[in-house]
Amino acid sequence: MSKKPIIVFEGIEGSGKSYHIKKIVSFLKKEKFDFLFLREPGGNPNSEKIRKLILSKKTKFQPKTDLLLYIAARNENISILKKNYRKKIILIDRFVDSTVAYQHYGMGLNVNFINKTNKFILDGLKVDFTFLNIVSEKNMTKRLKKRKRLNRYDKFDNDFYKKVQRGYIRMARKKPKKYFIVNSNLEIKSNEKLIINKVKDLI
Image (cartoon, rainbow, N blue to C red; front, side):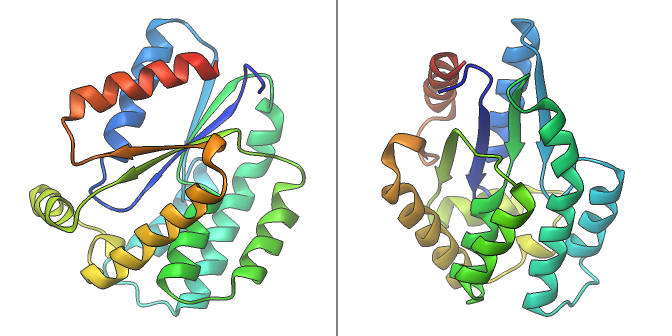
């Protein structure tokens, strides 16, 4: 694996994904590693505009519209990713697996179309490693209740999140060497150490 890998953090709402990304960003800054951090949807001015559309509580897009907007937001990041590919460590908060998990497993859209479209826009870019944060329904619900601001994707029913998480796990099990499943129901500091140690190995 390249020592300038693309590392992705995935997981449903309330899984602790964003917390751990922040800790890895702090670690890389402290150790003076050259890295790029992007979130999806978002990451640059155009993608952030699309993010606001997708996540707004006032939005009521059809599932296919959501899918195409996510793909469009990702496409706006491709030039940034290509510019830094194999030159910097790249951290991404959600990426192609999110689209498959949410839009295919969660919403039932055609996975072949999703995969072909992602392949088309990625144009050879490959994720090296993925941290998948999983969480129980009880803890997810408890954590979402603590959030001061909820977006549209924080408000689906629990059956939807179950389908999405099962989809994530299914993808992870197909490529066990490329995924690290983090049990976010366990003590957060212990998971933090596990993730940082694994990142050290990757870089």
